[in-house]
Length: 117
Image (tube, rainbow, N blue to C red; front, side):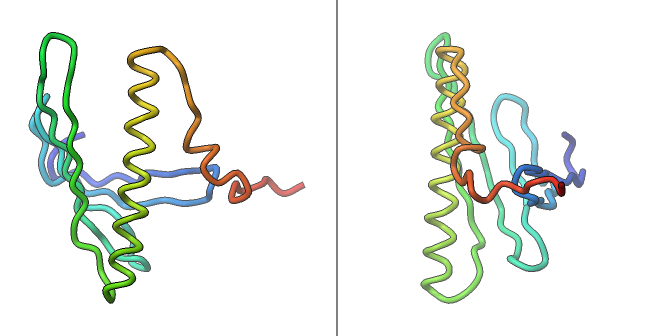
């Protein structure tokens, strides 16, 4: 990942993708991206990492720039917060206990894209 790079993050199981532009990258400190698509709009996400002790890191995530009326913005913000919270919990389980929770696949099992038969 480099500043100015564009990537496409894909969630094949859901048939979904998001364009990602890297806005800032400070190793061991901060990552900032702009992501989304032309249909739902783009938002910015900033992850900050603060070392706490020998083997701990505090991660903070701010997702901003939601578009639409008040209800739409609240819905997007709640969905974003829930998704990032779920992923952080799964990463904590993996890093601290070696357990893969499969939260992305399990979040919406009926939404998985099925290959044509």
